[in-house]
Image (cartoon, rainbow, N blue to C red):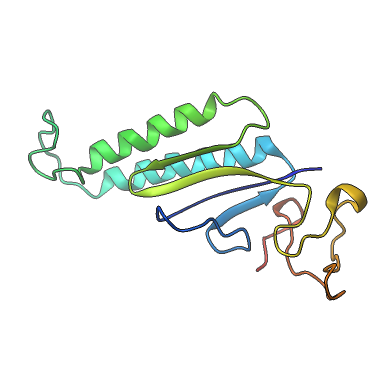
Length: 147
């Protein structure tokens, strides 16, 4: 029973699956992909709104240079289109508009404590194998992800 995580962060930072930069942790690959698609498209819409109308026929943009919101939004939409065509259960990552975006297969262990999901499934409150304490991570399928 694999887990999937999506999110984004600054390039060079490691993905943090404990609720930090992850947006979703779920058992459902399709749900993870659709959530990341929504995030990419939302980022594209938000990025494009902060620029004044301008002539952007040249690259780099004569008004905004490499930080042209129209070009960054187009890059985000192109990444979303690429993600939409991905085969099920496939991981994906890209650096777009200054952010590293990902859909990762976390495997069959809890990303926080290493609880072996394949052997026992995902109980609502599982215990960490190292010390027997409860692990606070919840799946998006079961409610909000808790750090």
